[in-house]
Each structure stands twice: as structure tokens, then as C-alpha cells.
Image (cartoon, rainbow, N blue to C red; front, side):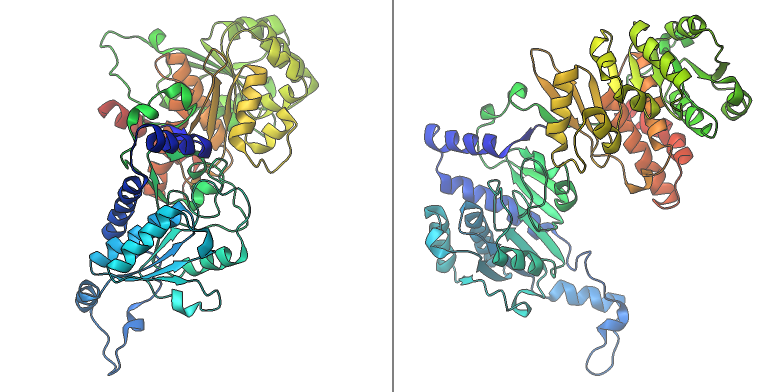
Amino acid sequence: MYLATAAQMKEIDRIAIEERGIPSLELMENAAGAVAREVLSLPIPGPKRRGRAMDWITNDGHVPSAEEQVDFWAARQRSAVVFCGPGNNGGDGLAVARLLLGEGWRVKCVLVGDRGRMTPDSREMEQRLLATGGELEDFSPDDRAGYSGFDVAVDALFGVGLHSNLHPDAMEAVRSMASAWWTVAVDVPSGVHADTGEILGRAVKADVTVTFSLAKRGLFVGKGAVHSGKVVVADIGIPRDLYHDEDDFPVSVAEKPVFLPRRRDAHKGDFGKVFILAGSRGYTGAPCLAARAAVRSGAGLVTVAVRPNIYPIVAAKCCDEAMVWPISESYEDLLEKARGADIVLIGPGLGQSAWMERRVLRLLGDLPCPVILDADGLNILSRHIDVLDKRSAPTVLTPHDGEFARLSGCELPIHDRLAAAREFVEKHRCVLVLKGHRTITAASGGRGHTRCVINTTGNPGMAQGGSGDALAGLMASLCAQGEEDIISAVWLHGRAGDLAAKEKGERGMTVGDLIGTIPRAIRECEEE
């Protein structure tokens, strides 16, 4: 799924209306219809209800049974409060209000802003609302009670063009929406920057966002990804040829990979050799987690190279599934061993001793195969970024935001992770996996085009030590097998985490649980 910027969507809308002759009111009606369908499909009461059975005591002291409660909600008139801005996003909201009225809902439609700034299309939608018995009221920020108690709040305050903090009345309207069981946002939740996902003072926390023609970047990155809820992309009648060229949309959402069955006559050499340089005193778990993830995801041969002082511990932890090799003092021995692999992973729990730093930097200069740098491998590189620029073979960097700040020199927090990732990749010609909520993978697409892919799998249960080690091992394994790529590894890592959370719960799951579900995640992709 391609992601558009606000500027791109404005231009696409302009071409559709001015050059293709599609009436703007027709597009607005189509957009409103898509939003109304989502509202009508919501189960009432919704997830925000915190009441218990004892809250349902009637005037005569009767506590309704579960069946009586179901009957009550089935017979009760549905209700919605629609908050509209003066722009065309508000026009969408006015049309939604009219459609819900036509379905028998009780609807309160509110204008938040100056009536004198209403667009012609919004004024037309107001007239259509009035013709069906509806009304557009002016927003009263002091009347909080008047906007509470509704089943659904529809956010039609602002569209993709918002770039500054919400004004006070809009912020009060956003607060009012939180009282509804469900909140549905039109195109982009108000207060979310459509391109970066930044929160502009305060933002609507939507359960569902219905966005039009193409999803917007801000719905999938930054805090915008948290505030958007379920994202529904609706076709509103804009010709698809206006947004089908992938070169125009260098940012996309990761899709579920597909794995082909293995050949019946395959042998271990067909599935790649992974070499992992990792571990140090006190950090013996990291190399083992990386190795286990590589083995579990199908690598043919996995070798873990560690310092002699931790060799017995790592050898015991890795059991019989990965080969553990003690590093000698000879750099040539290390280089020869690493050169025999299809891909080299450097860094999990490695430490940053001067002895190891010298070897890592020399390996980066001497290895002709792809290298993945994680954890301490990244910390070493951050002090010698010129080594990265001199490499001719592919290099994959897997930093979280703190490590990325050390690599790039940017400040924390990173306000626009997409822009930061793209700028770094364009400067250093590498593959960057910027880990975190909605991990971003950025890589050069050739001809000066840098592509970014946003991952949507995963959950907060994965936010624990060792999760990144498992991801690094999974990446190395898939790259060594030569049939999939880094993006697929990130997706699988998140999907395995989701499977583990479903079984153990987000609080109780471990990285070992995640690694144990990697085969299930891969099998899902094979069955696809």
C-alpha cells in the first residue's frame, strides 16, 4: 500500500476536479458515504464503555440480565455527534450527518470555526442537511455536557492541510470527542500532521480513520500511528491512473511476504551460511538469541564467533543447533572464517573494547559479502562512519532511535523519522532499519530514488532486551537464504511477536516465546 503526502493528495484532487471534470460535490458525497458505512457497521455499545452490570440498576431496583441488556441496545436509537470545520473536511462531515439522519440516527452536527470561512462545497452540504431536517449548530466550548453521551463522535474538523497547533475551540472539541464510545476520523485525525504523524498540540484518538484514495504517511508513523486506530482506505471516484505510478510514492506499508515451498532435493548448502560475531562477558544471551532466530527461520548453517572467555557458556546455551567458534588472536583466522559465509552479522552483545573495535573495522573493509550491523556493531561504526561510506558490498544497519542519533548526529526525539531515515540512506548508501513502533526500512531504489517501507506488525510485548537480537538473526537468515529480504524479516519478526502475545500475553511473553513462533509465522506465509 502506497502512502501519499498532503501535497500529493491536494494535487491529485485538483487534477481530478479541474482537468478530469469530476464534480467536487460528487467526490464529497462518495467520501461521506464511505465514512457513514463505517459508522453504521460499528457495534454499539463500543469498547470505551467501562460500566458493569450493577451500573444498569433500573428505577425499581431491577438489575437487567445480559439478554435484557442486548435487547435494550438493539431497540435503542443510535446517536452521533459530528464535529465539522469550515473547510471541505467539514463538508464531508455535514454529508455524513445527513446520511446518518436518513438511517434514523439522532445526530448533532456542530461547526467548530468561523461560518464566514466555510467553503462553497461545505455551504452546499449544509443546505442539503437542512433540507432533510438537520441543523448545523455553532460550537459552544463551555457546553461539555451537550456533546457527551453519544454512541459515535465523527471528527471532520481538519483535513490533510493542517500544519499548526489546534486553536483553543478545536482542542476543546477534541476533548469532547473522547466521551463517545467510538470516534471515527475523516481522512486524518484532527491534530495529526498528515506527513509526519506529529501531534499538533492535541489530537483526536480515533478508533477508525477513513482516509480517501490513498493512505497518508502520518497515519502510519509517529504518534499518528497510535491516534489513527483502524485505517480504512476508501475509493471515492478519483481515477486510479492518477496515483498508480510507484515511483511517485516512495513510501509504502510492508505486506505479508510469500514463501515458496522448498525443493525436495535441497541440502543445507542451499539455505545459506550465517556468521555471527557477537557476545562478551556479561552478554552471553545476545549471540544465542540471534543464532536461535537464524536457525528457526531456516538458515542452513549458523556459526557464532565469540571470545574464548565466554565460549563454554555460549556453546552450552546454543546446544547442538548452531556451531560456536572461539575467536583466536589472529585476525586472518577470523577473516577467513567470516569469508566463508553468505552474510555476516556483527554486534549483538559484542562490547566495545579496543581489541574488538579494530577487528570490526577491518572486517568492514575486507569482507566482500553483505554485513548486518546491530547493537555494539553500530556503536563502533558511529565513531568511524567513514568506514561505511567506503564499503562496496551491501551493509544493513539496525538502530533504534538512540543508536541512530549517535550514527547520524541528529537530536532526540526524532520528529520526522521518515525524513531522517531517507536523508541518512541517501548520504551513506546503505540499508537502514530504524527500529521502534512502526519500524522503517529505508534503502536506495536506484536512480537516486530512496524507498521507505513501514512495518505494521508487532506489539508492546516485544519491547524487551533481546528482541533486537532476534530480529538481527532473522534478517541474517533470510538474506543468507537468498529468497526474501530485510522487509520480510521485519514483518515476520513482528508477526511472530503477535503470535507470542496472543498465546502468552504482552506482559508475560519473552523473546524466547517470539523465536519459538517464527516457524508458525513462516508457515502462514507459505500457506498464503
